[in-house]
Structures are given as C-alpha cells and as structure tokens.
Image (tube, rainbow, N blue to C red; front, side, top):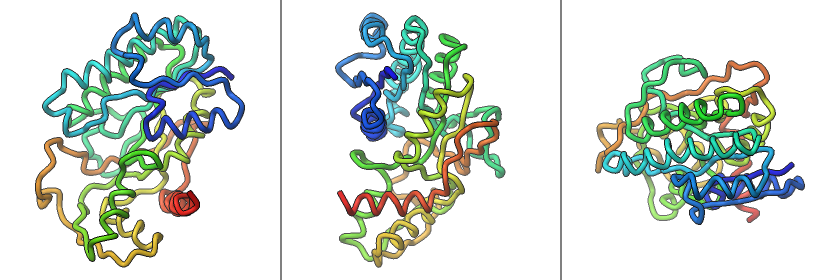
Length: 280
C-alpha cells in the first residue's frame, strides 16, 4: 500500500512510519520541511506520492502554549487539517486524522462516546475540534477522525519518561489524582490507526482500555519498573506552578462503533512498553 504520513518525525509518527515500512508499505514521510498550513506546499507533495491512505499526524501540540498562541495553533490544527484533507481528496486517498480527548469538557462521569457533544475547555482543544470539522467538511467521504489520549512512546517527551527520570533522583513525586483518562501507548495506537483506515469514514475513539488518574498511572509506572519512588496524590489546584491550560477532569474515551478497534487495558500496554524500553 502507498501511504503518506505527516508529522513523521514526532513520537507517534516515528512508530507509524516504522510499522508501515516493516510490513512493506511504500511510505512518503514528511514533517516540518512541508508546511501543512500552505495549500500550495502540501498539495503537490500529496499528488506526487499518489497515496492510498494519508495519515495526518502533524499538529500544534503545545497545550499550554496554545493558550497564548491560539491563532498559531489554529493555523496548524484547523487550516493545516483542511489543506491535507483537500489534498487527500484530490489524490483519491483515504484520510486518517489523529485528534484528542481535549475536544471534550471532561465533566461527564461516564466518559464520552464518539457522538457525544464536544465542549473543549482549552485553546488546544478548540483548535483540534476545529481541525476535525475542517477535515470532515473538506473530505467527507474519506476522513476517519481517531481521537486518542495520554499518549506515550519512545522518541518523544511523555509522562512515562518524565516519571522514570524523576524517580532517579526523588524519593517521592506529587502527581494529580483528580484528572482521569486513558493512557495510550504508541505501540498499540499505530495498528489501530491502520485498521481505522479500512473502516467507513467517521469518528473513532482509539485510546488505551480502562481508565486511571495521573497519580494512578505514576504508581503503576514505578511498580512495574521496580522503582521505590512514592506518589503523593494532589489536586489540580495544588499544582505548583499551575498549568495555563485547563485540563479535562474526566476524559475517558468510550468505544461504541461496531468494528472499531479496541485497545487493550492501559496497564498491560505499559508493561510491554517498559520491557521494550529495557531491551532498547
């Protein structure tokens, strides 16, 4: 299969490109050298690659930075998404767009199904929701939106690596316990994205199975990695310094679409990630 991946040098992009190449796909991998906010730049690249599937991973991902740079985030997350969607449509390619749990407010105790009304609380969430809508409008018959959450993997900054780094020098760490979500390993997300490309267009939730708090996630990291560091559970209000962007309090993503991929429990994925990390 011929594929094109934007954001190919990011944490998720590296794993996706590696996986596609390993299974024999012809992959065109692009990153910052092609400006997705410029239709004249992205359109010929997609046309020349003649992809059957475009995986759009490029995004403005600085959640806190987006609070003061919303216009810049919107340019990448909305206009960039629309440009890639138009180029994919012109090439006759399916489109898979990676989105986020931040499109929801986080107030629903039962979590969120794919069709639940969004209500982002942060600039980042607003721009990602705008990108979802732009892609669906530009390529309605070929776009799959794949929302994920709490992503971690090799080759990028993430919560697991932060906790392991802190555990090397600290006996205890203070971690928020009143935000609940679905930790997701890139190693599990990549196959799910590929499966979604073959499903009918629409919105899919592709986050790790189960749920936990950031504090619970940290405790599992230390326990599975054999680190003695203790977790001190705190509230969001006790964070020092506080985060500029509001976070969803409970952004659990539920999978309700028939045939949609269901990722395994987050704690099992974490164990495999840590084993893979040790072997590297």
